[in-house]
Image 1 (cartoon, rainbow, N blue to C red):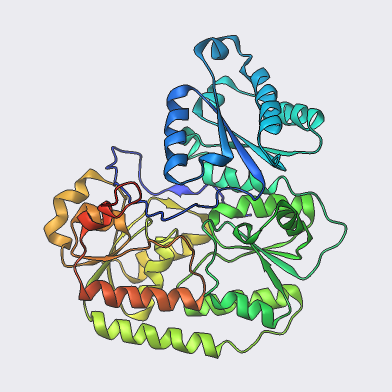
Image 2 (tube, rainbow, N blue to C red; image 1 turned 60 degrees about the horizontal axis):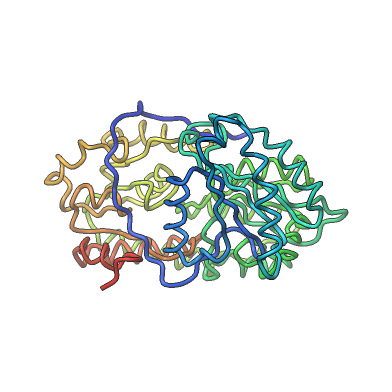
Length: 420
């Protein structure tokens, strides 16, 4: 079993908060189709969530139950939740098929019995699916930090299926994997149907995910959900987080074919262009140093290793959280390239090294902003690249980044809510 929590490479310290831009041009899919969110929190926490929902154009699919100090002291605020659910089902048209009850840090301090609350809700509203999700940052170093808990909670609403079809679920990727990825063409060539939450038009489409024969885990945050789905639904999983190594990508497709009993189509129409893009970008960048951080890729150590294997000059990797499955990348870099510095992200000390890194290409907005780097590989799209397509996209971005200087002021002005 993989470590879904991850371990910290560095001790907790004072952190610099990077003002990450939010470029949202229209409504964003949050959660499941035909679903509704009930945020249960004190007014200060709820206000922050309400503002976020307004900015993401999703306020129409959520409600807020503000709990008072007296509710907290008396310990009976859980009694308010079923009443709020009843009001939602009576007023929201059409009535939601599923409701996520979302709780904050105060809930951990009170020790709410979530299983008992779920049983009560299911018994009182049998036609509605329920889950409880945590958005409490105090649990970010727990076994189920908020991003992991969200995945586990959402997929807990799936019911066991008596039989499995030719579906393959994508687990862990939010936002969705872009349809430009060859994953979909290869799956189609193997007679497989790819399912992911963002492609579900209805709640019934989501429920069909329980029929799939395999879960493809595309990020570490989806691993705990896949493990629980294997235990509860009988769906095996393949841990295949996004990678920029062409060999690892090919191995994922080989494993997917083997696990589903299919013949693997020819990969060369997708792999060869990726290898050509790598050679083109390597020649264009020459010896330009590269900085990698986790705001550009969820697994920066894996990305850094791939770039080093291709001959790029990686100088700095900013990462603190590492999963068991990625320890090999960490040790490989330490042993083969001891000159590569691995440092904690968001350290206030980074700003003091701006001159040292100003000529670098930074993969990720956070490191570029902190270092004042002239060249930035940014990831503004509300989609998730995967496979050989992701390699090609990254190489194009590296070439473009070196050819132009980043305008951080423009990026922030174009951020949602700051448009001019």
